[in-house]
Length: 71
Image (tube, rainbow, N blue to C red):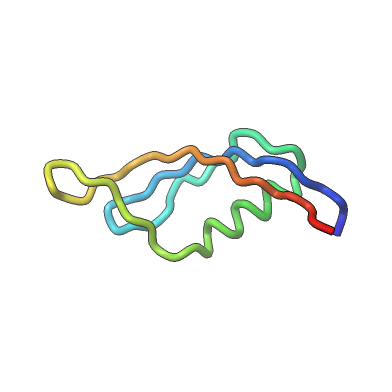
């Protein structure tokens, strides 16, 4: 809508139940994209937790999320 695009670098923790916690945007080209990234991650379904010695464990992830305009 505003012609904003770019890559948001986000960090979060997947807990033992697969819930996302500690969502933190590390880098973003615009506050609108920051807000959109956080909103989407908060509404996402459960993720797969890490495994340590065969048991679920917390794991930290850092991923880029690209917002691109298409015509």
